[in-house]
Image (cartoon, rainbow, N blue to C red; front, side, top):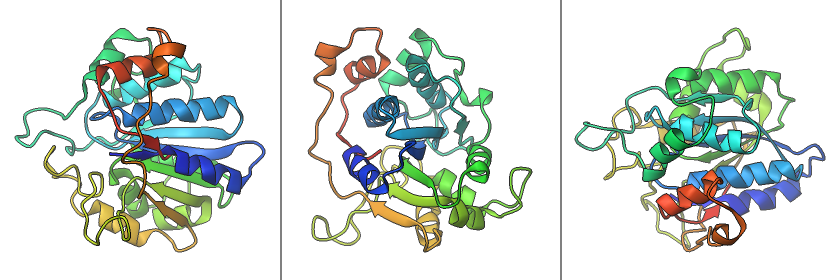
Length: 268
C-alpha cells in the first residue's frame, strides 16, 4: 500500500497554481500507516501554500478511520476541512468478525483531541465529493486516491442532488483535472496482471465484499479529459525516521509511525 506522495509533489510544480493546488484526499487510513504520513505531508504542503486541501474522505468501512484523520486535521489546526466516509460493509477481516485496523487508529482516536471520533459523525463520502466539486472551478481539482476505489466508483454512479444538477460522471468531467492513483502496476517494472492491494480490494487481508468490481469500474469510466497518473514507484522508499528527532510525543504523525511501521510516501 505505497503512497506515491513525491510523485504528486512533482505534479504540483507542473500545475503551478499560485493559490495552492485544490486537493481532495481519498484514503483508507486504517490498515497501514502510510496514509497518515501522506496526510501529514499534505498539511505541511498546505502550510507552504502549495496545496489547498478541500476535503478528505475515507474509503473503507471501519468507523474510526475518519476519526484518526480528524486527529491529524486538528493537530494542524484545520478541524474545518470537510470530512466524509464510506459507510458500507467493505473493510472487514476475512472471517467478517471485525474491521481491519492498524494499531495507530485506536491510539490516535482514544488519546488525541479531535471533534470527530467515527463515521457516524460525518456525511457520506459521495455527498462530500459532490459538495466540493460543485463549488470548484472547472477542471481544477486534483484527487489523490491513496486507498480503495469505493468512493470514486460510487461518485461516478451518483445522480443529481441539491449540490449539482449534473450526474457523477459529468461532475467529474467538469471539475476534476487530475487523479493520482495508488494502484496500477504495469511493465516494465511489473508484468501485466500484477496484483495491487488497493485495486484488488485488499484481497488476503480483508473480505472484498462491498468493493468487488469498483476499481475496474472507476478506472474505466473516468472521463477522458481527466489526467490519470498511476503508481509504479515507491515500494522501496522508507520514511519517517526524522520524526524521532524533530517531533515530540504530542505529534500524532510521529506516534502513528511508532505504533506501526509503514511503506514509503511517494503519492499525495
